[in-house]
Length: 169
Image 1: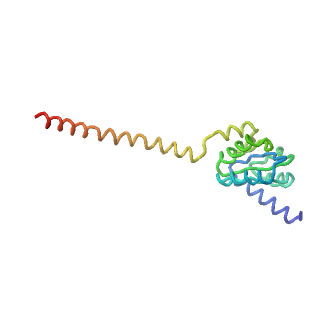
Image 2: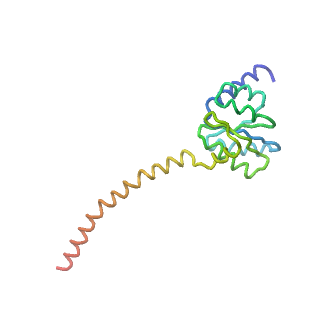
Image 3: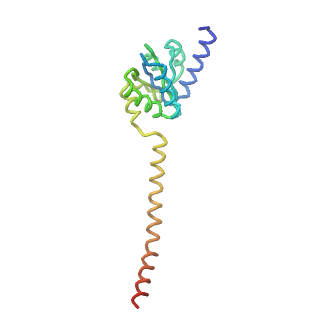
């Protein structure tokens, strides 16, 4: 690999580490090309990415970022998963790792903090931003719906009383 290409890769990885909300470090020993392609497709579907990295270049790229502590996790056959959504990448990686024992979660980083594999798993179990938004909208809409129902109820009761009065006499 030429020096210019290495510099380009370090710059790309550096921008990934600066822009990503969450980074998950994995070992992918023994995964086939088809399995990696399937994982990348699943990651793309949720707005995340999966990238195989050269440890030496990734260690250079992570130095001046909030994810500098990740340098100690970059050993062995390493790949990183990252996303702007704090739970998208961990959720897909954790689900894939459950089905495929060749992918191991080593750790990760979120908000400048180093996470171990258990913390990444906990992050994966949280609801996504879209799920939280849907729950919030539901909570906001519920009182308004109930209020409209309550406001309509007295009018309906008066109409039934008048109808009953008309039928009786």
